[in-house]
Amino acid sequence: MAKVLLINSNRFKHPWPVIPFGLCYIATSLESNGNHRVSFLDLCFSTDCERDIRNSVRNFAPDVIGISIRNIDDTGGYDVHFLLEDVKNDVIDFCKKEFTGPIVIGGPSVGISGREMLEYFDLEYAVRGDGEAVMSEFVKRLESGLSPEGLKGLIIHREKTIIQDNEPFRVDDLNSLPFPKPHRYLDLEKYSRFGSPLLVQTKRGCAFRCSYCTYNKIEGKQYRLRSPKLIADEIEMLVKETGISHVEFADSIFNIPLSHAKEVLREVIRKKLDLRLHTMGLSPGAVDEELLDLMKLAGFNEVDIGAESTCDSILESLAKDFKREDIINTANLLKKKKIPVTWFIMLGALAETRETVLETMNTIGRVASKWDLVFVSTGVRVYNGAPVADEIMSYDTNCTSDNFLHPLKIEPQRICLEDIHEISKRFSFRFPNFYFYQKENITPGWILVFGNLLLKVFHSRQPVWRLLIFLKRIEFVLGISLLKRGLYELKLSLYKKKAMINKGFSLIMGK
Image (cartoon, rainbow, N blue to C red; front, side):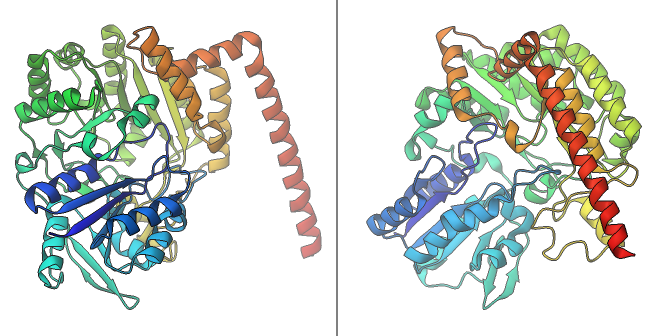
């Protein structure tokens, strides 16, 4: 019986701490299918990673360590925080210091840049694809003294060289996987204080080819659908075992295939559970009244929509499956059904212009509810395996030295990112429900905790982010927003004057 220490390395908490369900799937599979002993170290809330890793390694004495790495960075295209540096300094280096046995990394980020991450961390093994079966087989071979070479889904890095880079492993029958048991491995109360939802997948894979996206590289290009009845059973079990009724469907796109999504909702409705449901992905190209009625009956109190743009030319350049008209119709239906929405807008595609930026911002400001959150980011982060990465490499092979591991942002041809940044910032001053992404705007954790406490006290089903809109509306009434805008314009003016002076000085010295 092998002993496996699983470590959640994700300490990024924006917009809230994410419960590491993927690692819980791995833990449950190791115990159920391999009869292995599992110890779980969650570093999300750790104040001393070195101490916690040292204690876990010394007390448990594992045969192998598995480390889940969720994000390469914070995905911001304009001002990116490279999270792998934090993982290396706070987790990987301490594990290597305390443990001389095999260390295996996995998680969504490894599905994007597994071989590059092994080289960056100077580690030997990475699991790519569905980790439940790969990790179980890896530990089985380790226990039996067999070589892991040849194992599908495993990348091997030895002596500064990638000696194996196998294709990702896909579980064909997702219904065969055991239900995860996060309550056995995690202190869920810490996550509950922030309002973090339980995560459930209705399928894996994505059939779309959005230009900037890597979902189909991580999960495959074909949908692998789970049984709607099993999904409802899993939700019922999780709610009963954890006491948490806030559940998020963590699919890349929840409502495609539309018929499957509707059947999932019908099965959930039959359970008659008092749920607060949410999904990170709703495509405007597949929304009708029946879907929204089922969502309301099932318990949806908010949805997220990655519209990215409301300009048809930009949507086409991003290879989206919907058009401006779909976004407007979906917005009107959601307002009619009174379902709160977070709209995600991503400005800065290769084809972006000043006119398309203004069209998108003005349109979403008009069609979104005044109490919907409009989350605006500037710039498109390029990831290995995304179609746009291939496009850029076709005309600039020197654009990256590590196959897009470190952040590389797209620079539109007809407008600079700084100008998009300024336009977006000004819209955030005009609209209380516009949230402009930048590091200084990240919501402090105590606000989320306080907001969720208020919702519990008043038994409200409102999404916690409406508190942010409420606070900005107060700033508008008190004139604080006007003051902030004035200070921003002054700072911007001084910055531009300084830049002009420096440019002039450089020209003089150059002569």
